[in-house]
Image (cartoon, rainbow over the protein chains, first blue to last red):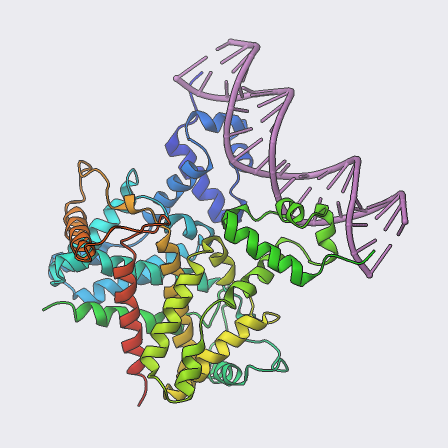
Length: 225
Length: 225
DNA sequence: ACCTGAACACCGTTCAAGT
DNA sequence: ACCTGAACACCGTTCAAGT
């Protein structure tokens, strides 16, 4: 008689399920089972799969660390450091939910409080840093585009680069791959310790991310007069 | 008696279907119908949906314009211009196939001749431009990450920004949005002509793309000693 | 108001049966 | 070798029926 279902509980269960079993196993039936309820009961509270995705998206966005911009507001850090902390957290969070990314990049902000809150924190930080107001949104979108792609790249298999070199017609790329991978393993070995390597995380994703992030931060700094 | 099906024909039909009806309507059943064949017949030539996606991905990658790197090889253009032409083409092509992007970013290159060919052209160009060999792959991946995200952003609805301002707690972002959108429409109007506006293309995606592309190109140029 | 259970139109994939 | 047709285990969504 007392209702057990509401949007809040559904969003929580969806986040749990997708965290535990992976983003592609989020299904109406599985979600309902986890909530101990019939599948059709979900439709009393959410509009459908799209609505569920947008609910989940906002929940995930709430995990992104924007505290560095508050610190910037208090004069405790620089804009470049604030951007770097935020961007790394953003990539880290969404690399855990790759299948959400196409939806996020294409979904309106209205009705997503956590998302709106994040954008506001970043916008405040850029404004305080001296970025001209008409450039604030383009900077955010440019960062986001890069961060989405980088989050996807975290899940790229390392075997992308360990292809057999006997395939013809890719001599320049092959030699570039070899130069890159050997530089990565060299840098990795210098720690000397045993390899933890829990998840199947692509070890070749970090250098490209650092390079692109640096590029975007420098460009942003050059926008302030 | 003469077989009508092979991987080549299937790839062509998939590209046609996805171009005509959108990337999310690519389905085994629909593809089979278009080929005038039973659904199960497809499994004689392709391994399944994943295999089909990788076939399609390579076909789409073949549409990307890498001719600028050949021109660079002939000394007819600069590395920055070659990168810009390639990047714009890349975004343009994949903005037509947004649902492919998560797969592309996460799929091995081996067995994808067009893809391998594109990487080789870009790698050759970067090497010729003087980028240190161990940096070539990171540069390519950083560009790609940004290009994937930018291609997704092209399909973001313009209504992302036209949200009602009565929602509380986003004052910085709201004012930034207003400054940006008014600067875009001002720049757009100065052409004066009638608006062609065929597809539902997001008009606010171009400025962020230009900004990020410029940032990445400058960073790449700074890598050459 | 909220939930159940049955139904519908779809998925991808497998497999015996034909030729 | 290659295709058909039926079958299977799933999707998301709708809707009458219950309480």
